[in-house]
Image 1 (cartoon, rainbow, N blue to C red):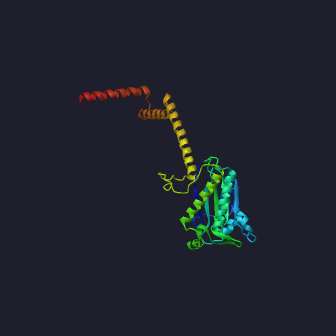
Image 2 (spheres, rainbow, N blue to C red):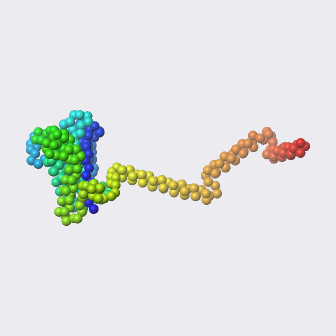
Image 3 (cartoon, rainbow, N blue to C red):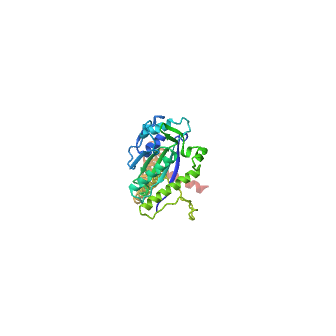
Length: 310
C-alpha cells in the first residue's frame, strides 16, 4: 500500500534555525554558517543517494554562479534577510512510494522539485534519503529545501511561495494560505499516482481526508524518528533493569541456601564483640572468670531468697 506523506515546515531564524544547518543535514555535507561561524558537519551520512540544486527553468545564472554551490547559496540566502526573526527557507518533505524502483523514485522527486521551482520562481535544494538501517525499510523520502525569496538573474528578490503576500499570490492566480498547501499536496499525489501507473502498479495515494474518503477512524499519530530512538533507549533501559532484577533474585536465592549470609556474619560478630565488652566491664579486678560466675550465681540466690521473705 502506497503511503501519502506530505509535510511543510519553515526554517526561521526566530526559532533558532539556520538554512545552512538545514542544508548541511539534508545533503550530508560539511557547511559553515558565516553568520554564526558555526560548522555543521554531516559528511558521515551514507543514506543520501542523490542531491542537487534545482533552478527555475530558463534562469540565466551568469551573474549568480554562486547559486550552484550549496555553501554559497544558503549563506547568501541568510544574508538576504537581516531581521532577527526572518524566515530564510521553506521545506516540503514527501514520502517516495517504496513500490517504485530507485530510478523512478528519483525521477518523481526531481519532477516535483522542478514544478515547485517554476511555480514560485525559487531555488530548490533536493535531497533524496534512503531508509535508515534500523528504521522502516519503506521510508524512502525526499526533502525539498526552497528559498523564501524568488531567485532572479541578479540574485534573491521579493518574498515568494508560501511567504509571498496574499495580494501578490492572487495576482499570480495562486491560492492563499492553507489552500495553497492543499493544492501542492494534491499536485504531489497526482505526480505520485502517475508514476505508480506508469510502473504498472495498482497502488495509489489519496490526498483527501479520511472523512472525505469515507473511512471512519481517527488519523494515526505521526511518530517521529526522534521519538522512535527515545523509545528504543527506554526499552534498552528496561532490559537492563530486568537483568539487574534477575541478578538480585539469584543473589538472594544463593544467600538463603548458605548457612550464614555475609550480612549475618557481620551482625553475629558485632553481637559477640558487644557481649565480650559487657562481660569485661562487669568483672571485678583480680577475679577469674570462674570466680566471677560463682559470685553472679550467689547474687541470684540472694535475690530469690529476699523475694520469698517479702
